[in-house]
Image 1 (tube, helix red, strand yellow):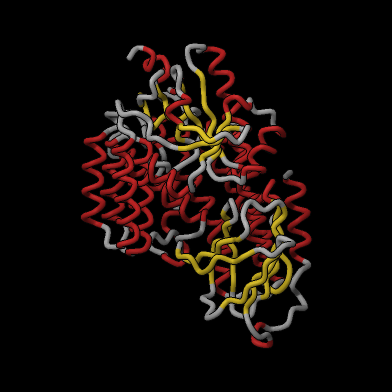
Image 2 (spheres, rainbow, N blue to C red):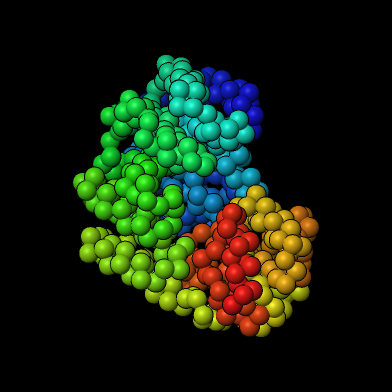
Length: 471
């Protein structure tokens, strides 16, 4: 979506909602809508990462749901992809989305439309701005130029919001969220700036940035549990603690957010800085989950796991990490890939191990991340051209069989390298310790694991393939 289209959409938003009646005059709170090209027969509604309900779709792929005892604030809707919505008592929100382009097609109408259309458009605008910054190498500019660029983007968004608030009556709670989105998107970019530089000058910027560069930290609330589901707030916190962790070791080791050193410092700094239990649990759980899902360091994993278990009080979070920790033991280097059942494009059921006949790397994809799926397939094809000793296997994790086949045909993926898990995604994540579709397995010709935590997008991936041939 172009920046001009985003601005046009904001103009439309500003004209909405001026003549709405008051919430107190309406009875009940409702969520309804239509899912175009659904991938299942229901949507999930969550609040604070806790399931509120599974809402069924009818034969026309529509749904209607009345909420009881509404807790005003952010909710998560999930149907193959996740997005945030905002609900208050008395809202009657109607949404429509096409799963082929989830975020880009998600629109709202009805009572509560203005707030939710503003939120989704802010989400898309942030992505657009990030793309512009990457294409323009904004992160590689000097600190003053970088600051001027992102401050301009912040001021433009603030101007849009002020006009929106003049023309739409919203609650204080939503206004807080709308302002937080802008503030924390801006602050998150400040935090990631030093570690986004390439080469030796990264160290120079760590030492030379003036303290005023991080004035936004003075306005940040590090313990606001009401915002913990907000993507902007999450990005700020995670970027901040990655930055602070790197400051603890940057003179002795290169920046590596997957290293034991980095994550040890990160856990300890979070424990020191964060006082709110909900925020701390989110940050510690996200940190240990990413480490366990991406590291082959068995001893380091044990150390960080013990630190985490001693600190966390949430039984649900502990149970989740315990499962991931145990799953990691199934995919340690030197073990054979777990026996999983898959189907090929002819709908034949096969054993995953039986498909490994030569050195192989396995990648994963889903229709929920089509751009990632297309990019990974193209990258895999180019890699095996350079390293013909290898082949690859592309595994779809959680789509309907027909949708999977249609996507293979639509994007011309090599059908001989495509299979789909027969078991639920929940079971697969447990068996293979999957925390992300970016996970890539490297196997020898007999299916023994060389690396269960590789990443096809990593600059070191080809080196890992070469090293695998030497074992």
